[in-house]
Amino acid sequence: MFSPSDPRQSPKQNPYQAPQHNPYQAPQYAYGHGGYGQYRYEPLGWKTTAAAVGIIAGVVLGLVLNVLPMAMNGPPQDDLGLALLLGLVGLISSAISIGTIVVFLVWMHQAAKNVRAFGQQGLEFTPGWAVGWWFVPIASLWMPYRAMKEIWKASDPETVGDGSGAAWMARAVPSLLPLWWATYVANGVVAGGLAVVQVLSTLHDPTKPNFGGGPIGIGAHVLIIIAAVAIVSIMKQIAQRQDASAQRLQSV
Image 1: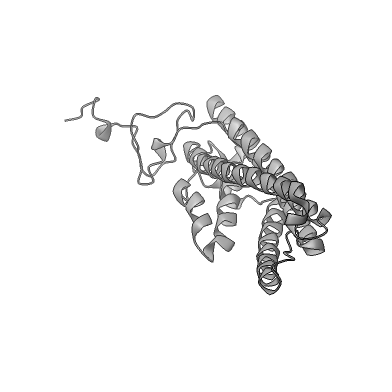
Image 2: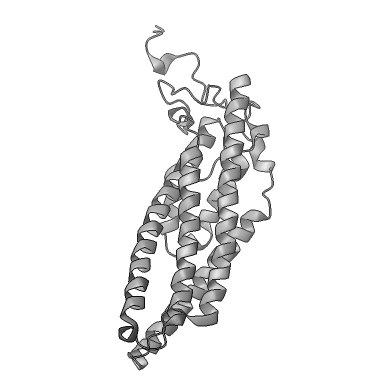
């Protein structure tokens, strides 16, 4: 016998139909095999702002760390004040970097949850794996980019509320996304190679450590500046697209 108090017997439950619900309203139960009903839309506003500020601050401090050692005309002990300043900037930069990484991953996790709250179907990356792929060796070279592409496409307001939940798949992504990822990966390769050179140089002559990396270090920083500007723009646009998607669903 049907019991209206039992959500398992609710006539609204249809695993073959895209979820139709107010994205702002937390559902009372998860429906469908994908569990899309368990997700509630949350604006990305403060997370976007906090991550953007952290990214920009990290880039600025990184540039300082690259340029400041060039003013050192010898071993750090010859200019103790400058060495202490360099260490302080390094500590602040590390703290900001850790905080920014945490906020960015929280942002990405919520963005992946939001597209599910919109009822989008056929999504490959769960919110957990949208974050988790960043920590998988080798796969982290391309999987996080694919996850971001999926979030971008599934955030398109013109694809929500169409009944199928699959229109987003045919959407394209702007050149800004591959530019972000190409410069981000290239910076990682250059920075990694530079770190190895610095270690070998220090082992060869501990009295003349190479902290800044010179022109190569600046070149790596140019790459990270481009990547930073690109990802900040991407995050802001995704936040705007998701706000528009939520408003569209409210009017359906």
